[in-house]
Image 1: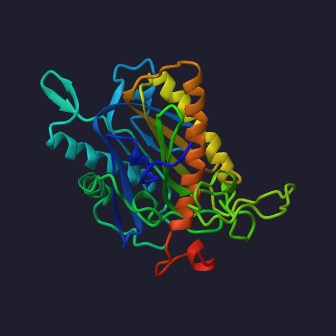
Image 2 (image 1 turned 180 degrees about the vertical axis):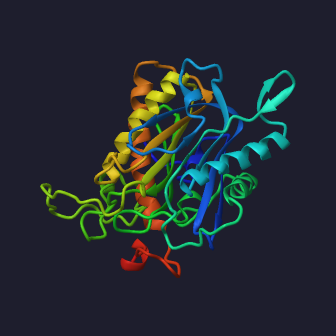
Image 3 (image 1 turned 45 degrees about the horizontal axis):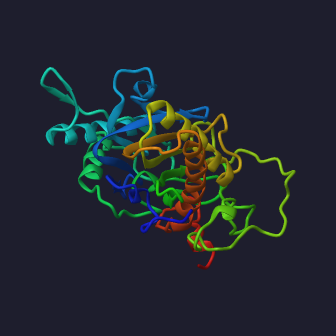
Length: 330
């Protein structure tokens, strides 16, 4: 396995990512857009999720493909970002056809960033606008760190952010991850600069620091945020041809990457979830082995993407938490 040429989820051909953010509100939205509809699924492990249209991602539901997936800040208000994306897609003639009408299918998930110091006294919910702006910005290249859905994110100790990573498997299939990290837990070991995801790092993508020689495995963490303030939301994607059931298994396996990179993860106070997306460009040649390897690749990508999110976050005036980059020299 090796990273794709961009080391971004957009190394999966036919997928683009767009970010939009609002510096005054200290929040943002991110959209994953396909050149055409793609198979999608979801798996939720956290105890406090916030979602839109995730029920239709079950394998027994009528609609088997979606037009886009959205990650956003704003808690329940942020779910409106998907409405902005849906409006933009409808204007472009995209969507599930019903009797001559087009209905864009845009599932989404949100994180809580309402207490990060930004001005939340809006007269009109800004997330619909942010969704449309993110859709308009969709491209193969996009910013990491303090951008999009990760713009106002925080973790248990450091500023959070938006992260991404990719892998090309030996069979030629590509896997990528996109994540907004707003976790209750920590992505670093204690107070040091080393990332829990270090064993899966490739090419010094988040500093090449490795793990410390020893750490207290018996340490019992305390929640550093209040109930409802946390969540890590992610998308893993592949160009493999997967059924919705196989995509759901991919999302489930990817949660291992979250547990490798955030300690603790999947708490009662986090809304941790993973979407999976499959463009279907490459049929599986081995229906037993390749899904097994895909799951490992998705978990590896997600762990790396989580560390990159915090590593790339930049300091800004008014921050309530330090940025990793501000504390430790690169």
